[in-house]
Image (cartoon, rainbow, N blue to C red; front, side):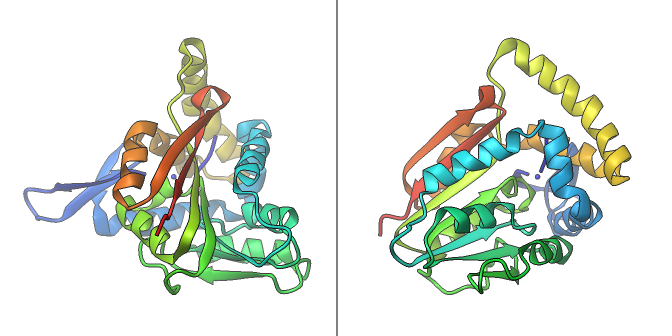
Length: 264
């Protein structure tokens, strides 16, 4: 299906460097971001098309559910931050669902993805959207600025997820909401076998044929398996200081929407 990974504090006994997962590989923490950047630089132009092909269009329903949970205001100012959303797919939906006072900042570390989003946006939203290059672990944004924060199929690519969660809380206003749409753990006995076969055998071939890159999509499939279980990830969200944390599985657990609130 698509996009990116769990960070650990394990250390290499030889070099003392921190390590993390890059798909099924162990790599130095400092190396992961560059390798992730290469993946998304390679697939940027075909990213949304591949999402449609890999998920059979289901990613649209998942994102629609994300926006339904978000409920951007139609009657008052609503400042939204979408992280790792370079192509603008979620941001455009937020603006269409919200009122004329809604605005979205799209932040992505990958400039190739941001260029795709800016081209797609054109002049459609009358200055209510901006595209910013930045790292989810160190957001170049002031404290207590946004009413809501979303990240869809991106947090698995962040080398240090706990830092990204802390930054999400920092930039939210009191009462602001964190929402994360991410691949999860399939919990239906027959579906899990079908899903594994499809993921490991069909998706890399699709990537080779449509995007000219099987290896990037092989990594994306592997990274799904390395992401924490819904319960463990919910614990990470709570540890970052969010309250009323929940997760909602969709499509038999293929994905889940994680929610948390900044209470104060």
